[in-house]
Length: 271
Ligand code: SF4
Image 1: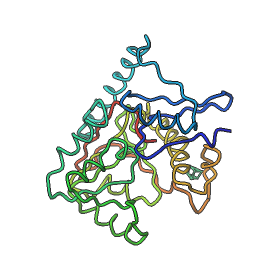
Image 2 (image 1 turned 60 degrees about the vertical axis):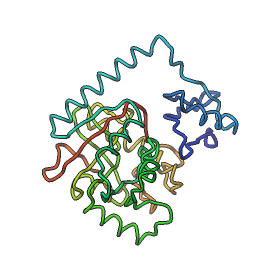
Image 3 (image 1 turned 30 degrees about the vertical axis):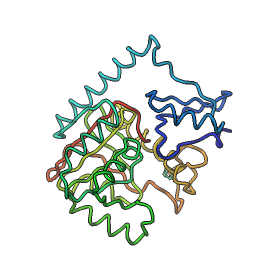
């Protein structure tokens, strides 16, 4: 019923779109008033009926407390599992933190990621004059994509996101070609994984559920894939040629030959 209402414009950092079939409206929840222009443009297009989150609500401190505790548990567990970990409050700080770790002249690879787009990472790298190895860059052909993906294994820094990070300190991701998850665990000299707080799951069971029942259908829909989930919004373990979930990787401890930094951002980012 709400198919026409689904919007997720590039550069428009709406953090979550909550849709209730039985309701008379779709609700957009966002985390920062700086993003007002995006919401205004959505409102003008009359694609959604907006209910703005009340940031002054008495519930806000309780929500913030809960989130802080969740992040603290996740950071502690990641560090216990050998990952260097950093918490930053917002996307801008995340981009700054990544950029500080990328020396000039570095060879930098990226995994397809809405999160990196939302935090302004691509724009920042362009401004710095750093050419990215981006297998999903504009105009990249299938053959070029394979070539770039292989070159990423020898890059200085690889930046990507995961589909979920657990409070037990594990990472979970699913991929279509496997290039992102492969480079995430082996190859590049340094790997930086960026996750919004919305990707924190209690444990691996919850992480798998979030990846298969939420992230994958949303991504299939976003990419215009001809899969059942892009229509129904739920995974049916399809056999469609367009299936985007072909490899699933659980990272339980920092892989022995990798140097991984996990950045948790205090905002909802990506799927
Ligand atoms: S397996 Fe198929 S139906 Fe399930 S999430 Fe992946 S693409 Fe969608």
